[in-house]
Length: 303
Length: 284
Image (cartoon, rainbow over all chains, first blue to last red):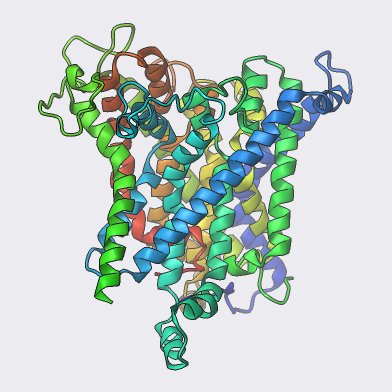
């Protein structure tokens, strides 16, 4: 059953101040951690970003951004990586969920397990696996294709290869959530649809899709978080190359900070990254009812 | 109907092949002898099985390492740090916060703050974390990395458990409070045991995430146990860089050792995962 969960509060006679006090005590470890490891770090980022290496207040880091071609290509690559990953992971994950949901054999749970497993595997091991598999000389893929392809060494193929390797890990995430959503659509809806004489396509369009819409949006939000975290595959598989063709923003920040040791500029880049993510999340919250679906806010407003 | 099912079965088998083949390939590479690894006609079914890639007496990690056994000092660090950050994130931070957010702090901004903590990419916080950990002199230590790992274990744990605490039948807690139990005791004695599945999924997911974490470990640690806190993913990276062209067997064996714990506990956690991720919006 798909439930839009509502928050429950103990209905005892307790005044608000008391409740808030108990809540704050219980949440205090999280709040303290939030202050020390999120608020303070962001303050540090601002401090670094708005000073030059001599320590003087300056906007030079932000001015430098406007004429940094590597930042520009990192942003383009990040967009490419993000859109490509979302497209691959959503289409394949969605398709796999629909297919498994329509399949009625005994092996259903076995398939679910098999399709889920890649999700548990460490990105570093995934990098290792694909290094073995995509190797132009000894790898099985090139043997099957009957010609050696320099997957990671070609500027045009490197990013798609990373997107595929990354997709291999996160398709199961989308699959698992959407499959659970499909399973939770009440059987009566389908019975009613067949009584009304709907065909398969109509049933999918008018019953299935609206029912799993909240789940799709939640899956999209959580999936985006995972994709934006991407770093390991680029670091290990291509190290940003060939050329700068797989520089994504997270990798660029790491490079500027820990290879070129330009902490001030890297801090400015970090703020830009946070800003982009914040705009994205804000848009998600405004354009969809994801908070309502998740139960963060109740329909009809909050106190 | 039957025909359709067979078509679906075939498609599912193809999906399964994609899902399992990279794992299969890594496992057989770990078990192969070198002559079957380095051949231009790849061997899909090895004829000779060897465990020498996992352990050969006298060979440890370092300039001459060819086996996975050398990863032990890194495995110790990974295990300790993943356990610490997962347990602290769940019991000390996530559980009480999730309970507070579902029962006492109604304001939507608390929930949004948790979401914000999950959304900020690691790469955007690595610089201040580096500065802070250096300043408190915890660089390359278990506690240093654990403190930083709490930045993803604590919010995820809060997020997951909010779904579980939000579903508690309120009658039980009412009864407890009428019996005179204080709010903290109700949380600790009544509510916490009732969300055990949530606690388990939180511990497991956090363990996997910490076990697999890469960027923070790369920057904040630099030597293995006992002198430092470097974790297994960094060991693997160095191994890949050093051994890229010749010790594939050892490399694959090390990979197998790293994925075994996460696959085993991942399978165990599977049935609670979706409910946790979606904060209870989907119940299975």
